[in-house]
Length: 276
Image (tube, rainbow, N blue to C red):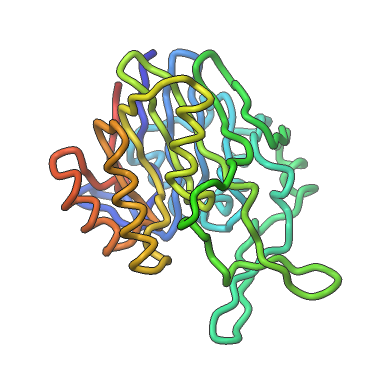
């Protein structure tokens, strides 16, 4: 299978005239079976960057949302305004009322639109919770089993309900897995499930033990130094050819990965292209 992934939205951009950065993630993925948009960023950069990078949003077969957070879903409405009717593949918890609590302050971090508004613009929601093949050799993970003892997630991410707040375990966190002759191509949103859990699950479900490329958000930024080190050590046990990080990886996480993976490591900033 031929794959071409282009980063449309990310926290940083270098040497691309006209492109802009924002805190968020969106990746335009071209395959033999059609083009897919994986996440949509916050919404301020995606239309501009799609034009700059010459990626036609009207040609996408479907939109895939890795999870409900605003920095991955905020661009959904402007994309729908451009594309019109399209399948939106996501988890049924997309519209939960989600907050981040820090130093006693509550900040809403969920999708900034309601379902009716999005459906009126052409969103055809396809909800799934299980491993799902969306095209030959292209899979959505669904809910990823949490099996490691060190990937503990974010305690400050919560859901509002009738009884107040409860911790959000981010069961809606999904990744895209593509099988190729060179190994697995794994596209991460934020890795709230834990990147090690995700890689182990992809290997278990596909039977592939070689990973050609991992790109996207690894969530190595907003975690403890101890968890970061445990994750980096676990990553070294996998057969990974390329690892390109984005978004929530953070500076410390990026530096550690660069130290360990050397020439296999790269940044996935706006305009980065990964091809197989």
